Length: 72
Image (cartoon, rainbow, N blue to C red):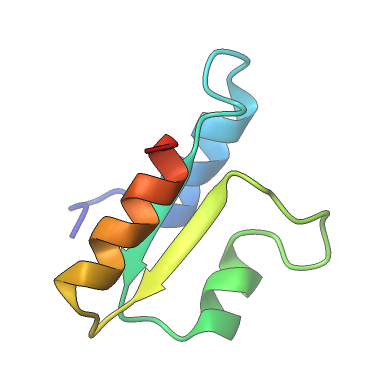
């Protein structure tokens, strides 16, 4: 949990700042995929730097996603 912060607010702040606008973002969530899409801007152009992994997942899936995102 992010405490009082909401994930979609953190994401919006990252995208609003020129310094972090293109930074890769990986979301690990229990929320359904359509719920995440709706909260992060469904209807807007897809963000190629936004990645999601839905719980439950295997650690191997997370490692593979992180390697891909980080270019390794």
